[in-house]
Every structure is written in structure tokens, then in C-alpha cells.
Image (tube, rainbow, N blue to C red; front, top):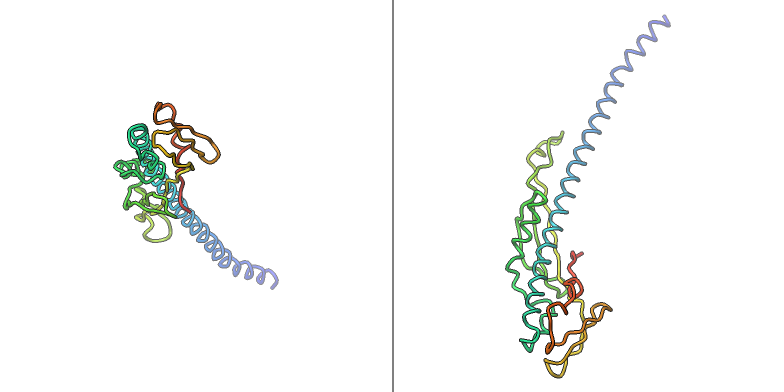
Length: 201
């Protein structure tokens, strides 16, 4: 009688064990699917950030070229330090190049100002998909993301009485002296001293 009961208990626990094992396996596969989606999303956001920064950095380079050409030639050369004298001719191409390097494609691109600072908003879509998982449709799902990067002038200065007078810039505590009457391109510091480029929060 006892042996028969033990065998019956063992027989009744087997379906429960199989059922619990199935639940654990399903949970593991579901967790893996969400991890796949999160990884794709993170990759998309990194690509969007890089593309937006590339666009803003290209515009900053254009600002530097304009400033270099205006000092000693244009009486309003200090206007370039406001950070809004660029056309952004190469910004979209720069964003597309960085997106491609991150296996993504730019799907939206536009000038975008934040708190008065000029910049760009970039939207991307990954060329790769989330991948196969237990969630239907993920094998063809692409991750998307967007980012905004802005250009912020870093220098304060007093306007000279004469546009040809030397000017001392205070660029976040770093002094930069520019004399339009005796200017050399090497007198200008790195672009990052005059303008910061960062992602908008």
C-alpha cells in the first residue's frame, strides 16, 4: 500500500515539474528578447548621438573658417563669435556619415535651437533588426532614436571702440587675444576653446 502511494506521488509531481520548467524557460526567452530590444535601442541612441554631434561639429568648423576669414577684413568679425553665422552646408552629410559608421540611416534632419543656441536634430533608424525571439515580429523590427546637439559660444568680450582694435576674449576663463591689425591664423585657439558642442538634455 505504501509503495503504491509513493509511486502515485512521484507521478503527480512530474507534470508540475515539467510545467514549472516550461515557465522558467519561457521567462528566460522573454528576458532575452527584452535584452535584445534594449541592446538595439541603445545602439540606435548611440548612433543618433554621434550623428547629431557630427552635424554640430561640422557647423562649428564652418564657424571657425568664417571667423578666420573675417578677422582683419570685416569690421563685424566679432559677430562670428555669437555662433550663428554658419549655413550648415556640410552638416547633413556629416550626420549621415557618422550614422552609417554605426550601421544606421538618417531618417530626419533639421536645424534645431535650444535656449537660443543653434544646433541640429537628427533622427535615425538602425540598418539591423532586433532579431529573432519568442515575440512575433521582432525579426523585422528596426530600432529608432533621435538626438539634438547644439553649438554654444564660450567667449565673453567687450566691444572695442574701433573694429581694428585688439580684443581680449574670456573663453570660460581662458584668455584669447586677437589683434585684427596683426592677425595670423595660428593666433586662434582650437575650435573647442571658442565654441562647445554638446548634446541637448
